[in-house]
View 1: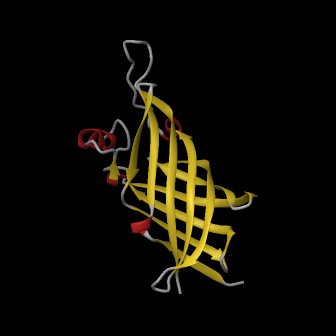
View 2: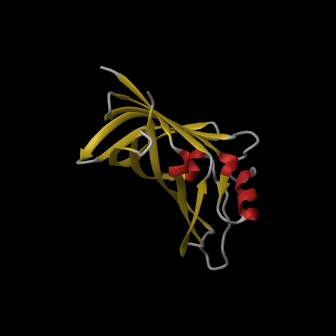
Length: 177
């Protein structure tokens, strides 16, 4: 069996998240600088090995003041914990082109297992001869499991931020020669 290496096409990939704000709507954000390295047997992603690294300082919620708050000790503590990492442990085909991708997510030096749902969108050769594969990624996590505990009580009795964070991504990988 031949091992095939795949790398991220950053100009055609995005990594985002959503969290409840004031318990009435979602606030979205993204990480603009991240990398994904994948190894497969031939072109078979059903047994893929995936490693992703995210530069936490690249967080962007379209609000500079909020982004700075997210980088400080109330949330990610970027000076002490500049990277988020994901390392896969298992791929499980659920149906058609959908897979469960299991692995370890490390945030703020806390590593916990997580399951991501991955939809394989297909493989194609681009006009320049590069073979590319596309994926849509979704998941959820409880931020408190990774030591991201900041919150504030509201006058109405609720809380400012939900605990569940929804993860979403569009990833395009490029096959390496």
